[in-house]
Length: 119
Image (cartoon, rainbow, N blue to C red):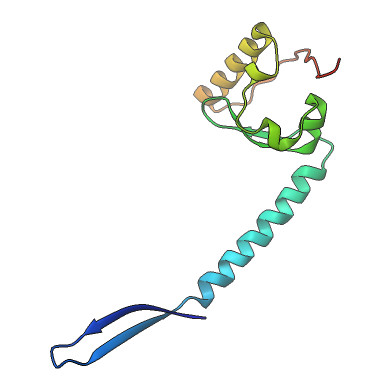
């Protein structure tokens, strides 16, 4: 696949057109898309709850298992925090765990009872 990138005018009035082959880049982009699709299928179809959060505690990726447990769709949960799902006291505990993980880089294990939407 070729894409025209630049046309230059030469002092003698002629033009030079430079083309760039982007086939390799397009192949790489397709491979990445396919790989991401496979990974997303694995994440969504595991019975384990998987999520990612940003440094502000907002969900950036939520799989079906955790979304269903909370009574939402994954799309509904993205951008929300523990404070949007749980009572303040429980959200404070979760936020503190997340801060510890960010500060130390070490996993944190603690059992907490989580209420679910609809009881």
